[in-house]
Length: 174
Length: 265
Ligand SMILES: [Cu+2]
Image (cartoon, rainbow over all chains, first blue to last red; front, side, top):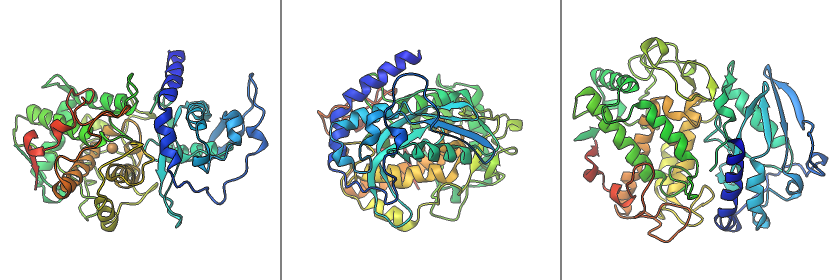
């Protein structure tokens, strides 16, 4: 079942290529000024059991995650118009990032979306990570695992004293 | 014929009747659908379908898909309550009237809704929750604030219904501005289950979406009823005369709310 879904993801990713690419070519994408440069964690990933890119306790819950963007993690994700055709692969790979909250999996998907910063920066277009929990509140994909840590923290803030259920691990496509 | 009123104009009896009908729909299917059917559709059609079309969100059909979705629920509530005038109320979140009162959606706004109409002790059960709990969750104001009147006016002033690339990344688009700046923001403002994929577990979902539909109708009054885009031949999205799943209806067929049997007061 999970394999079928994963194949679907790749298929949809390919089919959506033209749309996504044209979306982002015209985008006035502004990099977050404090966006960190691609770190060593984003490079040189090979097959095999990956170590966690972060593993820490936040508000009483263990959050951990693996950043699996591979070489695309070195792209300038804050400047989407430079991504060109790589946007499709980026959206596909972004789904394979992993975040766990108290060892319960959080499936995620990636969408092109507008962001409306509340700190005075202008609206811009980027790639957003959403899950069952933050379905209307994307976290911006960055060139390193910090975005996954932000996603984990956002989910913990929403959960409060509660835990993820099995539904949160269910994959879906957008 | 339903006349959809603001929650600010509802009587206590109307609120009670609405909440009772929602609870009744949890355990009966007067038109072959129960309440959980609506939650299933929301989860299913948030996904792209096998033909790679996004029907309900991040696409032009966001408005017409939800219009039909709400209309079906209204018909089901009329049937289950045996009241042909039963209506979906709208929540204008820019105003002072709150749905979060003991006699309506429940007064708990931070954490578990443990008492009132939509608590387990009143028979309200969750379905497909991604949060492990038996209680409806809310986190009012934690993740976002309410849109202001000026934000609503700014969004309503966009003149282009939608355009390429027809997704969440299009800037000059009434549909996308409304979907993200108003619709998403209020989902996040309520928080808890309203921020999740299974958001219709919280009945305030309908009050919020009713207001979104009202804003689209107001926009249509200014820009034209027959203004849906794309008109045809665009892949990956629902064109004006293509059918929306699971309803089998087209955006064109739901553009005029008087044809659908309701109005806004
Ligand atoms: Cu919604």
